[in-house]
Image (cartoon, rainbow, N blue to C red; front, side, top):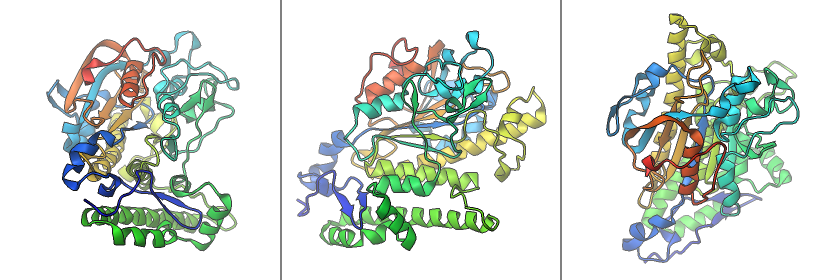
Amino acid sequence: MNSLQLNRRTMLRGAGLLMGLPILESMTPLAKSAFASSTRSQVPTRMACVFFPNGAIMPDWEPRGEGDQWELGPTLQALQPFQPKLNLISNLAHDNGRAGPDGAGDHARCSATFLTASRPVKTASNIRVGISVDQVAAQELQGATKLSSIELGLTGSRNAGSCDSGYSCAYSSNISWRSATQPMAKETSPRMAFERLFGDGDDGSRKERDFYRKSILDLVAADAKKLMSRAGDTDRRKLDEYFSCVRDLERRIERTEQESLAAMPDLEVPDDRPDNFREHARLMYDIMVLGFQTDSTRIATLMLDNAGGNRAYRDVGVGDGHHQLSHHRNDEDKVSKLKKIDLHLAEQFAYFLERLDSVQEPGGTLLDHSMVLYGSGISDGNRHRHEKLPIVMAGSAGGQFRTGRHVTLEGETPMANLFLTMLDTMGTPAESIGDSSGRLSQLA
């Protein structure tokens, strides 16, 4: 039996900071030999939802084959190493994303319905849509973790004014909604997101840390040294890996801030969001991993861009705006550029899965104990289609999902049915959400 016994909520402390720990052997009173089997049920399920705008070139997204006999399409080839741990789900739809009597504004409806499955009121001021699936779970789990949820993005939010054909910018800028009228503002700064995970909420201590450029690990060094001296070999190895990941993330955040500062003209206040899409996305993915790994939060959302986003992806040789290209009218050159963007986004998502799968936990990996939704509220961006949505679900949620399949649903199935299944899996069931009509038994 390990001589060191830790509570699951043990934190490292120092200079007004709380730092969570990964799941360790010493967080159970049982003998090491019984650890893996006895603690599997104690490992929490995590939920992550990742949104990309403007749909995808669906012929390259769609897989070949069905059920267990299938292959990933060209767009998702980067996910091939994780195919046994994911499901690609076809024929999900957001009926409330369609125009109906409201006319234009498909991009605003795309993001507003993505996690709510509810029809947004077409207005620039008195917004109303519906609570999102992540917030249904977060409210039920409130108090179980330091943060009930964390909302991240790569592009800033505008919650006032009209951004799409009379729809409020709040619809285009947010996928997470605490209530029908209150979006959850997303954090776009890696440093501020990092502070949310490890800070104690004291603005004074945060300013002091920033002034002296102190490392999180430096501030908890005494507590960490004491813990390491008492931990067993396995826990020491796990803590060493975790601390190395935190230190690497700190250095990357600082480097991107310095690069942004150097690039700014005199007298301008630098924007600490990295200019490089790939680095920014990976920093945010790593922050989500740390949040899950330390059980600081079990629920996270990430918007890779706002709905209708017109980012140019020069990293892969695409200088045209994403939204502009999405109205391609079958122009071969534009379609080719969109395929490059789709692949680039999928490669960053594959990085996230790789990081999750690298973290070992009792009974599997962090990916095994998670369910990760990746997709868009539009399929064909050229025609603004809200059916046959591009949706990937990665992770088995602790064995609750059977993975490694292309799940083909009948007709048009409400995306909200997937949400009900996700809520069941999180242990936060709901009677309905959005336009739900049932649950997806095909995932069990």
